[in-house]
Length: 86
Image 1: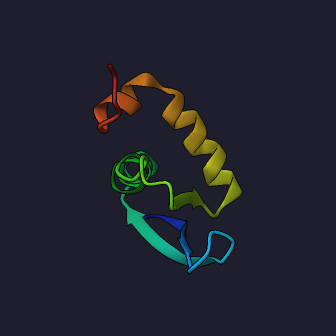
Image 2: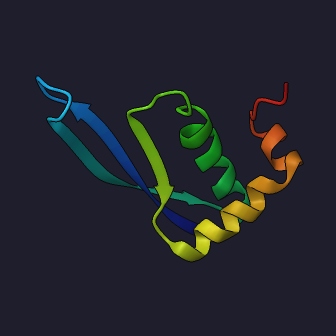
């Protein structure tokens, strides 16, 4: 079993534009392989919410973040998991 922790940063604004409230939470993900782990992260978090400016996602573990960066650079991984290829 593979484990990954996602950090979600949800930025909200109060009555004024300079009244910024950030809600930060950690989301654990498990999968049977590293490939499946990255696919879940990309499909369910990164790709699904890419046009929502107030939400940011990142992988907490630096070694897994660098492996994910290598994984997503492969066009097949990007396309097979719902990446926009137009």
